[in-house]
Image (cartoon, rainbow, N blue to C red; front, side):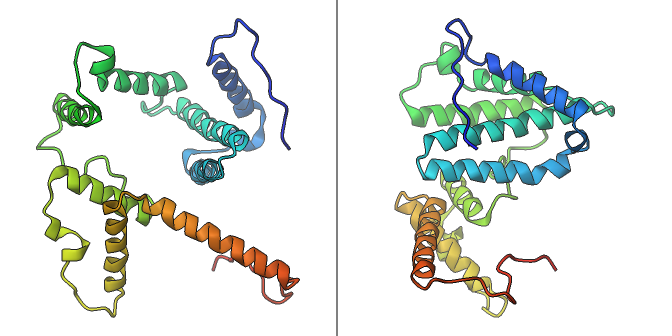
Length: 249
């Protein structure tokens, strides 16, 4: 149900309602049986789900839905921080620690904004980021040089992973022959060729300046519209003996 917008009082500071959200989360964690039993592991699917819903709202350019879905994503951040606050093994942290960490990182990595560094444009900003990240690794005592793939989350969906790997490889000067078009073809019985072909398509999209995730999503949504149109034209009804929802084995 869509709720009416609440306008803050004229003298309210932007962000003040975040404190209210923290207080509400504290109350739920203590007084709601469901909220009280949640863990990082049990909440993990919701973080992904809410993020995807926010992306869907952005794709539809529904700003009211975007506002609502961003709130759901924000709740997940506050919820996880509240769970972490209760840890007793020395690894706990609070929502203030989460905020402090990102504030420090943004300030440190934007010396052209918060310091006296001058940059000529976005490309130089990215170069500075690489240098700053290398200095951060050295300060943290991490042994050896930074990996070419440091910071690439390998657990992300395969399409997004392929695109990010290709972007990172290009920035790092990785030889083109290591890419999908130059990969050695090694049999097709195990499906390896299909994977390489898909990877090559991602590389083609990147070379054309397209986001492969958005392109595939647009095609999938177009297909969904056509399926709905067909179903409506056929007065389609779900079969009684064939549930459409995928059931776990």
